[in-house]
Amino acid sequence: MLATMCKVRRILGQSARYGSVLLAVLSSGCGERLRRSDAPGAPPEAPLAKINVTLDATKVDANHKYAQHGQFTVSGLFYKDNKSVDATVLVAEKNEADKVSHTYDFDYAVVGGTTAKVEMWDAGFLTIVVPDGGGEPQFQTRNPNIKAIGVALPAGQSTCYFANGTVDGDLRLALCALETSKPVLRFVDGAGIPASPPSGSAPAETPAAPAAPEPTIPEGPAKKQP
Image (cartoon, rainbow, N blue to C red; front, side, top):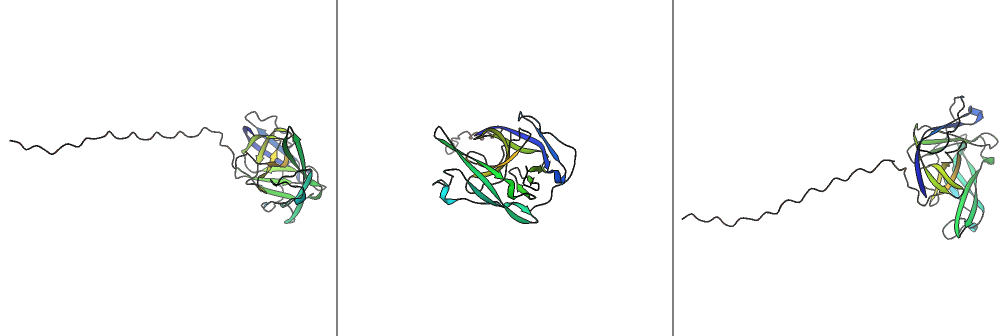
């Protein structure tokens, strides 16, 4: 599932309500640069996310995965006036060559005017601002260098920046499509994705074990001189 790793030196974003800013600089061959506008500003604060999902038990299989198209509710992520606002995630099942995969897309219609703050896997924080009316969200991270990796999603290869931890077993919240001009917030099936970002550096060499000492042969008792 894993492909190349890249470091995103900066990705900033805000809705038009707070001034439009969108910036990302990708390295290590991660794709085209995101565009930037000049209006500065800071997004509103939100409580740190404590995500909980509610699945439709009638549509999940023995592995707790959706066996057909459906949706689930996410609480503890988006906030308005310090109150959690439930979001809806649309689940689409795809079955090709007996391989089942799922896509998870947010429906922002009911979370317009909300903000989310998520702890990410490199100890940074991602802020998500959804404009009034439920339009496309904008994103901001305070880390000057965020760590993202390439993963294989049902829709194809994508560069994703993952939230810390899993939800409901192995679902991982991630900001994906960083190689494009429109990053997308979505859940990703987490099987095979490491819990923390790869360092991108070669592992330290293990020092060689010290050589065993030469065996010694004890001398016999000293002989008496005549």
